[in-house]
Length: 258
Image 1 (tube, rainbow, N blue to C red):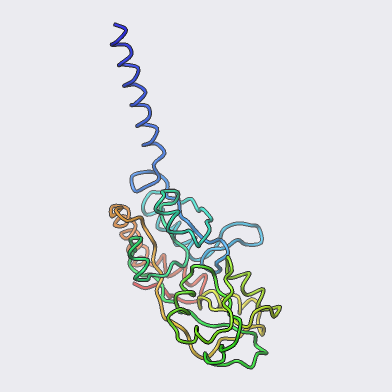
Image 2 (cartoon, one colour):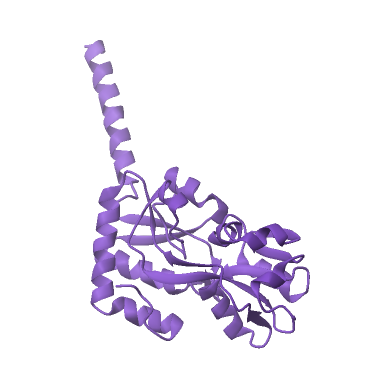
């Protein structure tokens, strides 16, 4: 009897453990989806004057979550560790102006692209720089481990730049540009457009862009079920006009790829 009681106790404990793990699941079969974001990436995802998360990707994710019947939980992360956060299971999705690249495709699954973007170079409006060649001998800033870094790496001008300064986020890079600590910033065009509209007359674009690109949502490799469920929700809100309204709110026009 003692042996039987001990076995029953062990089986009960194992069952409790399985149930507990199941109830905390945040994947496709759970009730929550944890979305990893950079909360200083306006207008895609950032904090407003009330410290609340707002932006195109914030609204877009919530709309998709509603179609999926999931609660969306936003988790600010170190953007340079985004793939590690996803693969460790601490987040379920990377969703905040996440550029689709061949290198990233080796690490994560991607939804279909939903927005076009480009990497551009921003300098001060009073600067005499106007073209990419003018970056020779200059100090250039960019966000660490971002697609801006990839775009600059792929351009021959990188070998002529004096120094590349990496920042945790674009806000700090633009702040250093504004006070003259650096000469230019490589940055997403959608982000640059937002800050230039808020601080008119301070910045300007160089005439050439570095690289066109597209944004997608990253899902952990092996989780095709979540990818397909998410893509179905995105297709629905793209087709029923929900995504267009969100785009018009943040960009003044419908930029969403159908």
